[in-house]
Length: 567
Image (cartoon, rainbow, N blue to C red; front, side, top):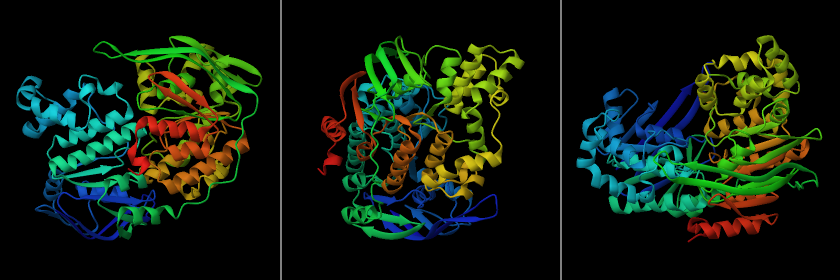
């Protein structure tokens, strides 16, 4: 079914250097087999998958899938033929139509026949493909979400919808790049069960890239271990994943104990969301808790439980329907939802890393760090107020504009355009830091995150997935925030790199006295880093405990996550 013969892929960087992403790779995959590919971030896993897909031209060797073979000098026609033989789900891919689950799948089915997804005739699509759409929706366990808009789905549900859209193309080979990256254990189990069901019922050959040993052991018939673009080992999933994990560094011996000082106070907070088609979808209700200085608090719960909603409320990015969220900075308590200079002071001490974060694609890492320090440096509030006064902007408008610096770039631009302002106004109010000062400021953070300083001069698209995650974390940490909000940003990291990041976060938070509230679905990561956990389900707090191991184990049992139990 698949034959990869002596494949090499070399990337040429803008500075003239080269990266050998794949180095003389050879293997075969039988029809109906599930092949797992595992390795550290940057080992070449995603490049290999993209080469199998036909979207990455190889530098040497050949790839054969079915009756289609491509080589370095093959015309685009053959690479396009390879695309027709395969379907792919890329990590952190959330490209969906702003329509219902069913309409998203009908569009893809219509495009398979008429090659015009944008111009889908839904009446025709329903009459020709309605039954097939129902079967696909059932196959990925989204029947109860068929009428829900994609925008209100949880991260895990979006991923299942993306897989469903790929199945609509009737591929011979399904390529999955971290298909359960952002999902909670419950949703991960549903995704993995769906993948097995797809393989068994449709006999589709599957190549699954995942750095999670539990997933490979649950899914794969055979596993290949990549290291520095080469096949280091292949064979039995249990043996290969065990060998892979043997390279993990030990847990750093740092005990991050919270102080007795409350620095965040959440009182009677409620927030209700509705589907555009009508009906309540989520009700976060009567949330009450305090966070002590230097706490490392994890919010855990199934996808759709309200964790991200709560974290965005904590970050002041959305407003509660009722209740208050207070932060203590320099002995003063300020409500994160009340516009003005007090809230701006809080936000200058706050770092927020989003689940669907995005680096500036063409900017160098150094430039992005300089911009970030312009937003979050020690004197930013005083200096921005002076600039705003010269521009004739009041304190509340300045504060509202400052809020945008904690939003994902696309969301921030959209909000500015809604009120008739150009994104450049943020550069005028919060000019970027000098590059020399930026290099000095980031040196210790880069060292702690095991990032080489030469990455400063690379552009985002030249980084591996794992490097992008650590660079984004460096962007947040470079200003030494007092409060750090993390929304499942580490799903792309392999366990070995994640252990390094976990150890680094423990060291950095201890050194600078950072209070962390985070969302993660990685149960081992939660146990290693947190000293407290809150378990949420259906928008309410079910449990709140400093016995992190017990609350996490209870959560795994609640999720019935057999892939984590070795069943």
